[in-house]
Amino acid sequence: MLEFLNKVVDSFKSSEKELNRERLFAYITEAASQRVRPIMMTSCSTIAGLLPIMFITGIGSEIMTRVAAPMIGGLVSSSILTLIVIPTVFYIWKRHVLIEE
Image 1: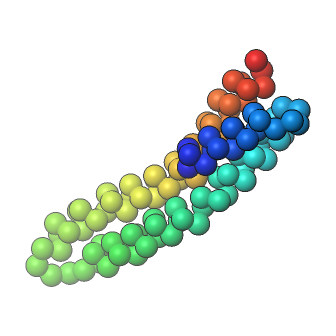
Image 2: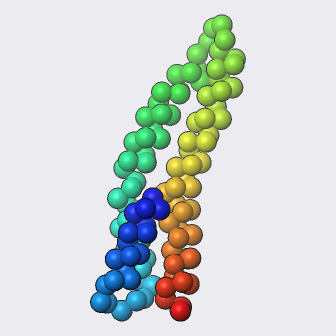
Image 3: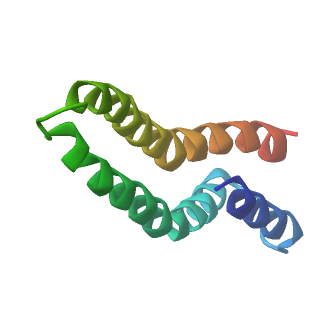
């Protein structure tokens, strides 16, 4: 995600257009939207593989459930962090660095 966001900021710096918040927001939104599908496909496929482990019964199921539950929670929280929090913080940071110089 950060690689895509940095490429957008580099193109934003080199553009001949006026630097403003709306254009920076549009560029960052475009870069972040390009990463939604790969991140969601990776997370969802791994979660789909771990869900059967959460609901199995039998010998050793207690241990496997305790292993799978934090992994699913971590995948959900890291997806939220990557798709929402990182672009938001990146926008706030670059807005102060680029526009308010």
